[in-house]
Structures are given as C-alpha cells and as structure tokens.
Image 1 (cartoon, rainbow, N blue to C red):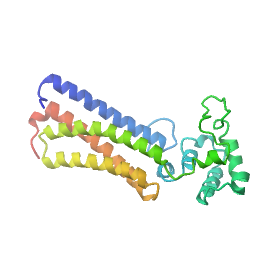
Image 2: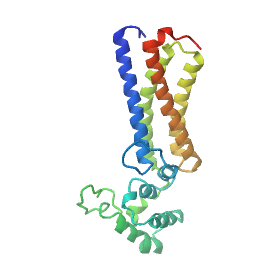
Image 3: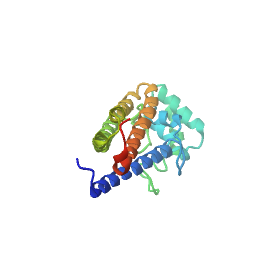
Image 4: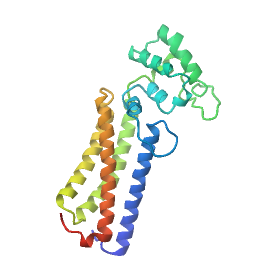
Length: 237
C-alpha cells in the first residue's frame, strides 16, 4: 500500500476523519438513548441499558424511549412484576396491567389510531398483543437482524483501520494490541447482546466492550492521521 503521496494521504485522511465523526455520533446516540435526555452528549445510565438488553421489551420501552408517556413510575413496577410472575392472562393483567396500557399507550399503540406518530402495527390492545413484548431482551429475530448488520458494518470499518495500522512505524505491541483489542471488543459486544437475555452480568460487558470498541477505533484513527502527516519522524517505541 503506497501511502506516501499527497493524494493517498488526503483520501485516507478523509476516511479517518469521517470514522472519527461517526464514532462521536455513535457515542452521542448511545448517550441519548440510555440517559433519557433529548439533546447533548450524555453518559448512559446503567439502569436504562439493563432495561433495554435484559428486561422485557415492554418494560425496556417504558423505562426508555416511551418513558415520557408513563403517567406514574409505579405503573412500570406493576407491569414488570406481572411479567416476572409469568405474564399470564390473569386477573392482574385484566384489572391492572391492561388499564395502564390503555391510559399510557393505546392512543398510539392501537390498530385504529390515527394520531400523528401512531404505531398501529404495534398494538397493545389485548393480551395477545402485549404478550408479544414480554420476552426478556431482544427477540431472537430482532437480535439476529441487529447482530449481523452490526458485525458486517463494524468489520468494514475495523479492517481498513487495521491494515493502515499495520503499515505504520509504531511498535508492534501498539499495532498488534490495538488491532486485536478492536476485534475482540466487537465480538464480545455482540456476544453479550445474546447472553444478557439470561444474565444481567453481560449487560455490563456490553458497556465495557462497547466503550473499548469505540476507543480502539478512535485511537487507530488518530494514530493513523499522525503517521500519515508526521510519521516520517515517528520512531518505533
């Protein structure tokens, strides 16, 4: 790979800067999704991450993206308790859970809703509707869809970064370490998505692996930019 001429440096630098901006945007999105905020750069709240990956889809939505529509936090506690008891079509569901959903959710989540932003394709009008969202974490179908998109997409980012790092004059420990950590963090991140359905411990590994993954990508970008424009004087460590 010839990266010494100006045109090559400009082309690769554009890629590296774009990836850096993408990493910043991803970190911002994660912060917004798991902090309950609507703008700015925020630190995710672990409770919201647990709700998304470990708890049921219904509870995760009520604690996360749909929280603004919840009338009372006790409503979430009651629904969560019902799901933990087996999510049966029982008296608790008919007399307490369903009325909460009618009040908090059905203005948008009903088959006949014409409200702006309504989701009639995701109704919560009866037990059959609601039971579809009581599975812990992502459904297997949604998990597989998200996982393969994420794996393919991030792989096509890490690969050129890794190849560029391999061409730099940095010490082999730095190069090999960053390349290895980036791939391992990606695999651990995705594996933890699946495993978090069964144990909350893996929610924490999602946070750790995701942070390492973004950091490794950003660091490879920064080191790559340094090498491209100032690397002729860079000596092996």
